[in-house]
View 1 (cartoon, rainbow, N blue to C red):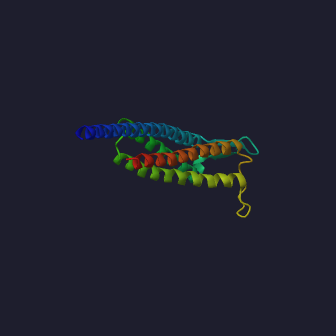
View 2 (cartoon, helix red, strand yellow):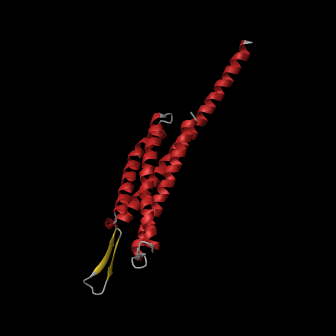
View 3 (tube, one colour):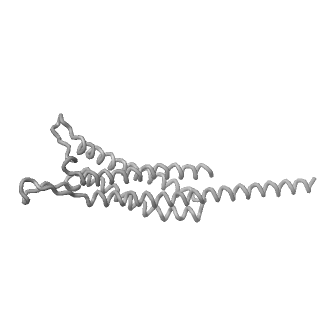
Length: 191
């Protein structure tokens, strides 16, 4: 009887060590994926902030001394967009250190919860900036005949293309934030 109990205990401890090794490797894999997604999101927000912050176009009018100018600073919405992307980039740089610690120490749960909360806040700021800028870009492309706002993208074509490209990078970062939040939730729920 005793020998059977010892064998049963050894089998059970073997299962536990196999299960814990599997959980550890899955958690480490998800942590590595989290780190990579944070790097990609940081690159997306940095590219969006730089693209919008350096956007300007000048068109001549009747003479070469009178010119029309389109600069992102002329619209407070675009300024908020640049600030939101810069804040998200700074946060993502800081969160990379915590994400790297999750690769090394896979059982850290409290720091993952903190990251989820801050990811949600930063995603909200980023989404607010991107959606406000999208409204202005839509107005620049289509205009509004009721308010007598003419579409300026017919004249300022390269300005509108750069701004639209900047929005794409920001929305990709938002999608990556959603995936990051889901990944962190999965790792926490596996504990």
